[in-house]
Length: 362
Image (cartoon, rainbow, N blue to C red):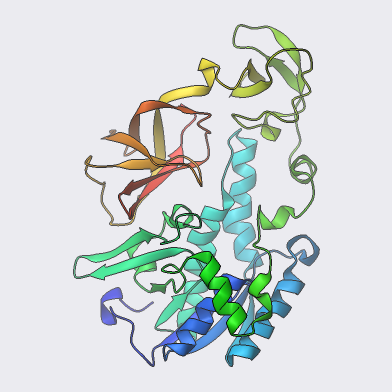
């Protein structure tokens, strides 16, 4: 990979390899780059072998159609082996350990901005581009990752584990544009994907029930479902099928307030449940982040920080303390509901995404 400092500012004529997913965001990204005078090449990434589960055939047809309309070449590249090794194996290991992972974040770190990045530079790229709603700011001090201008679509949360080396060579053409305007641009250009529905959920699960999918790979071990006080209310079919804050699928009937998962005991195979959304056991004032990654390659100063503990959550003011093992202790002024081990806590300072780590069960 070229050094980030060898071509710090994009310029007309640079070769940009765009990840074309078959959706409207990446299509408009490629269109805008072509209009701005870049040499644009499209790459469709296949990350899962079962086309039926991922709609890969339909997405490839749409991506190829977009490339043809824009007037750029496109190549389909199979990264499914890398995805199995680096993302799906992590996904299964986390669920087996009783945590709730976010594979989309690892997919960005390991596939879209590593395997794809390496492939793009083997094609002679100066830059790569994707349809993510995020922005970058370049200066002599390095490259910063910023929130997308459309706060409803901002995807910086999913990109927080990228390194300086990764974001230094990335362009996010739609990061400065509201989503409705992106669709208008696609429609005005006659792109058939202008009204294509945004993809949701985890690609490889498809439309099937999550429990059914996970059960194909991991064996559930039934155990007691009980209150923190020890009252047994039923039996769960495996801790891996449940997450903190879950309400649906518990099978606890009766009158009164609904029941929620409040925690797990992996050693004793106990699923803890409490009654009522506002039960104290569902709230915490602090959290530990492990395996932290910082975009600027340094721990942020404890000044003006906010955090997100899940995507689309409002920012939470927090205080940061670095622990001896390099994990981070975050403390919140206001208690937070259903903090979920295995998910990611992401730190911000105003519009700058600083990085984050995995929420610990401790």
